[in-house]
Length: 329
Ligand SMILES: Nc1ncnc2c1ncn2[C@@H]1O[C@H](COP(=O)(O)OP(=O)(O)OP(=O)(O)O)[C@@H](O)[C@H]1O
Image 1 (cartoon, rainbow, N blue to C red):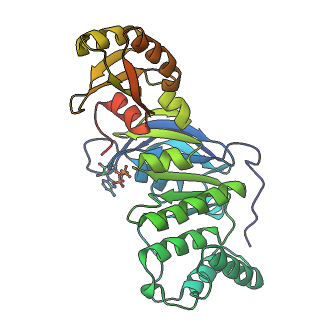
Image 2 (image 1 turned 60 degrees about the vertical axis):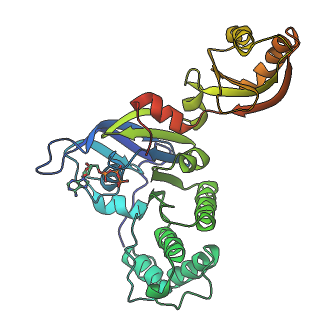
């Protein structure tokens, strides 16, 4: 059995330094000089549109893709210098199933653990426990060929946990899953985190990134444009919180005059044109709810009534838009 030293304990789970990947014959770098650190025990999301370089980055981090330059350590191991040790400490849940379809679900788990040197009794115990945890007990003897997409995804997660990795990488974990299967996968990711496993996931789904991740790195065209907690990323966005208000104005008053009275309260005020009465959208930085009182007062001073209020929080989609000028998808 391979001797695994304790290197990296207490350090970062993943350390990426000036990573560049250019595929042969391609005019541009797929990954164009990125650096970031993933802390132990956190869920780290790499968010970006198709082609941003997320899968390539994950490929390097998981020893499948050789970097052009730069260094990567996972659980204290340099992945290019010692890929065998790195693979003993990490696991990958790939975008597309690479399960062995000719085998049963349970055999897929047990063979994977055997490859990683887990003893017979222990691998059988883990297979049963993980089939149960992933809601597949009773289906372990089925051929993978008979599995639905959601079940295969769950089995991929079970397989990834068979050798008790320190860091689990999930590439687009819920792409193509129905909403229920997606929530199931999200819960498993939360369980991993609760169990002290570090999780790195890629996604082009801003809900997934915002809901699951402690910190999110936003990628586009091979570069890392921003990295922070979802809350900090959206907070840093000026004028992206919104307060939509419905107003019943006093007889003799005009929409224009009401909007002008509201203008000093926000960074920008727009009339929402498809509304039946007067509806306005106020854009501001920070807490939109705190604006309800001042808006109500300003309207009261004109004998207008506030009849409806909706608060719009900025999303990671807005952050991406402000960074790139494009929609996430
Ligand atoms: N094996 C490869 N050979 C050549 N070019 C590649 C290869 N894999 C990816 N690329 C190119 O590298 C760039 C980044 O692709 P990558 O798959 O890493 O992005 P992504 O953000 O993961 O997108 P997706 O969500 O579609 O997988 C793209 O321009 C892609 O065409």
